Amino acid sequence: MSKARLEAFSDGVIAIVITIMVLELKVPDGADWSALAPLCSHLLTYVMSFMYLGIYWTNHHHLLQMAGRVDGRILWANLHLLFWLSLVPVATAWLGEAGLEALPVALYGVVLILAAIAYTILQTTIVAREGPERRLAAAVGRDFKGKLSIAFYGAAIAVAAAAPRLSVVLYVVVALMWLVPDRRIERQLER
Image 1 (tube, one colour):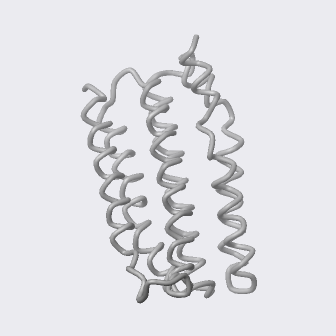
Image 2 (cartoon, helix red, strand yellow):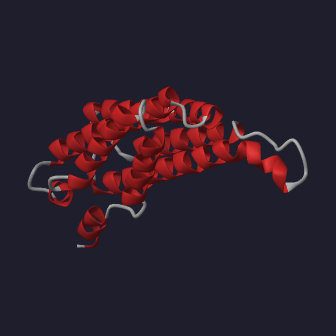
């Protein structure tokens, strides 16, 4: 099966998820700067979630560039990832509305960790399909950054009840780690 259809579908889902998130932003109740203050939490949460979706989109793109063909296992692994990404708008809206309350902060982390696990499953499935001797396996290597991200999400979820601000800082740290697309794959593509 060609990967073009998988890429197009995934791009469409991510675009819809971003659209849903932006539609959750409310118009200020006034025309001065003070009218923006009540929306600050919503806007900051939207920016963080947009960054995450952008990170997944770019890394998904690079990952699929390395794949030759896709099979049923890859399709299902991809749907698994898209399922968790489709929950980002709900977690974003709740976190933006509730602010730094423990449960919304923890739930946001649960969505992030499950998306990261789903991405890891997709990556592993594609590597298995391509074979261990292929360029993708060499590019992914031990995936230290992916494992570290999952560990940070787990830590953020664990401390959310006692230190929700620290949880959000950990979410931002992970996003900053991934802001630049995965150079390991780019280097393999340049060869």
